[in-house]
Structure formats: structure tokens, C-alpha cells
Amino acid sequence: MALTKEEKQEIITKFAQDKGDTGSPEVQIAILTKEIDKLQGHLTENKHDSPAKRGILSKISKRRRLLRYVSAHNADRYTAITKALGLKK
Image (cartoon, rainbow, N blue to C red):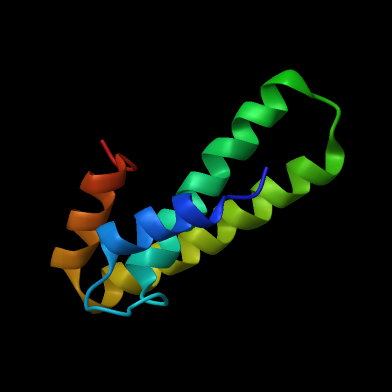
């Protein structure tokens, strides 16, 4: 269920602000989104996996907090990340 090193590296290179950037909110949001998508796929097959449900809820809430931070500090970056990940319609 965890992301592979290659998947994480691909996300980092796509959403990094500068070279070597691994901790910006955009990178964190993108990684969380990918992990949430993987967990949702797992939960469709394993409906009674309670620890996975708890994990997905914690990842969703962390992503929500990061999105709130980005929207409060820079609206342009917020719209760019939500469009790139398809979060808001």
C-alpha cells in the first residue's frame, strides 16, 4: 500500500518548487493524494479493514490542513495544486 521510491520521486520532481525541494506543501499534498488513492483501491476490495479506514481518514485530514494552509498564504499556488491533482471541481 505504501508508495514506492520511484512513485515518490516522480511526484517530487513534478511538484517541487526548487531543485531538492521535498517538503513544500505542494509536494506533501501530492504524496498524500497518491497514498489516499491507493488506500481507496485497497478499501474497495477489503471493506472491513478498520486500520486502513483509520489511515485514510488521517491522511485526508492532514491533506485538508495543508490545503487550508496553502489557501491562506498563497491563493495562486492553491488553485494550481487543486487543478493539477483534480481535487476541486
